[in-house]
Image 1 (cartoon, one colour):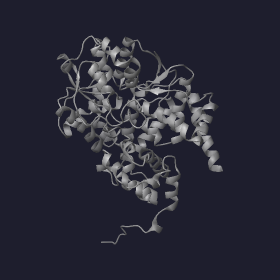
Image 2 (cartoon, each protein chain N blue to C red; image 1 turned 45 degrees about the vertical axis):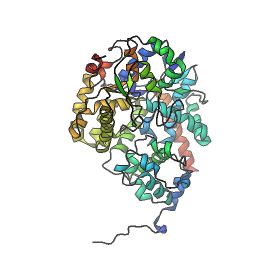
Image 3 (cartoon, rainbow over the protein chains, first blue to last red; image 1 turned 90 degrees about the horizontal axis):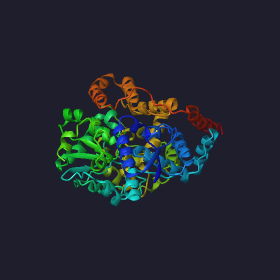
Image 4 (spheres, each protein chain N blue to C red; image 1 turned 60 degrees about the vertical axis):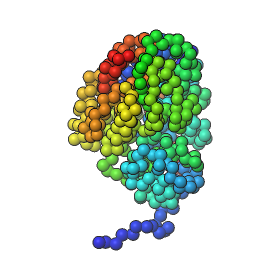
Length: 286
Length: 197
């Protein structure tokens, strides 16, 4: 299995632990991933607020580069996953937009045909690798551990076809394969606050607090997520949340870290120490 | 107490704005909205908004330009797409919010105390320069431009990120910056050509 890996800015920055654990798990499972050559920022939510056509062109450059090689594109960051898929959809639906964007790309020697396929690691792990194979790699099952599977919004909405848009289950299945238990809760895809935690904390922090408090109430020992922004909001702002509401002290892990631990990979290889709220005490009990 | 007109006459509305909204990508089916309010109910931020998404859609399609473009609503949308996935009429509410944000920036009428438009502008500037975003530099730049005091309250978070090796102060850059600029400039040129027409 060969794929092209689109890291995006977060996985090279504040979400380093996601890249580390994603690559370590892929390696251990024999999934070959090669970083997309000279990729640029996908544009995230911010660029769409400034210039629509350019935001499509920005993502279009990445897709045009990906089309030169074989293999589906894997985008682990929810925002990258959404933007790349949104671009493919938009360019297919709107001919005028397509003309402008493909024309601009062509002027720089980039050929966009719309043939790339952008996928999320949740999709690839469950549907290409398969749960059976993953279970065979589980050497140190996380028995007795209880997690809150928190997907966030943009990984499933509005383009994902590999899972339900409000009640997704793929990550729950992977956590179960790792030998741990998932709490039942209705907040799997509720907004974590996005960029509002920093820009409008009155509103943003409250949203992050709701997720943390509800996970704790249901007995979760940690929150598990596939999104670097969710991880950052829920992990990084717990001091501010403590000052405003209450202290929660909930570690926030990437699902790739959970899988890696169950597969017997080392904590340092998986970037476990990069959590601001330490997961070590929780994981010591496994 | 000065007398203030609380309800608009039809003639007070900006018909041109209404036509513009419904002619944009994503706004074509805005007239199909049945005002059921599921967008407002499902929106995790509607309780902070001056107009809920349902009201904003109604105001936009009737041409209440000033109310819509200077509202907090459009800047509070965090793009979680919950409204869009629930809408029985398949209205792309999130895309409409983006469209209105762009218009508000273009016309310079966004609420002054909101740092989000500044963030969006700095974000696109950084991409034009480097092709990639360094989150640390972006956030530092944003707070220095908008709110010194808030920046000081962020130092705890900054320290935590440094401690865990997640902070980087060097801008990351793509190799072929010229190629990316050429693409973005080509779009500018194309749009200028359209304006002349």
